Image (tube, rainbow, N blue to C red; front, side):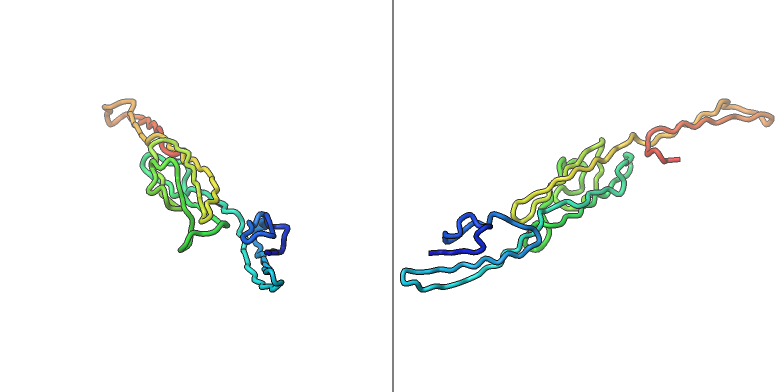
Length: 173
C-alpha cells in the first residue's frame, strides 16, 4: 500500500502517483510516501515540489504611445512568476503582429500605420498564460503650409506670413 503525506493537498494519498491539487505560491512542499508490502516491510521516500507564483506581466509600457508616421515606439514587457522555459524566459506572442519588428520577443519595436491595440500573451513552461494590452496611437503626418498675405511687396511695406500646422504629435511646437 501507498501512504502519502500531507494528505490534504493530494487527490488520493493512497495511490502510487497522486496529483498535487492545492498549490500555495512561493512555497516548497515536501511529500513523503511510505510503501508497505504484504510482509509489512516498509520503504520511505520524499520529494520536494516548489510552487511558483502564476506567470504575470507586471509591466507593459511604450517609450512613446502617441507616434507620428515618421517614428516608432519601443514596447517593453516585464514578466515574473511561472516556470521559465528551459534556458530561461517565456514564450511571447503579440497580436496583431502587423507593424511589429517581431511578434515573438518580449520587447518589439512598433511602427503601425494606424492606431493599434496590441495584445501580449505570455506562456510559461507549464502552459500557464497571462495577457495585457497596450494601444499605440498613430496621428496624421505632420504638415506645414505657409502663405504670405502679399506675394509681391515693395521696400516700403511688409507681408504677413501665416503658417498652418496639422497632424504630428500634439506637442510639436
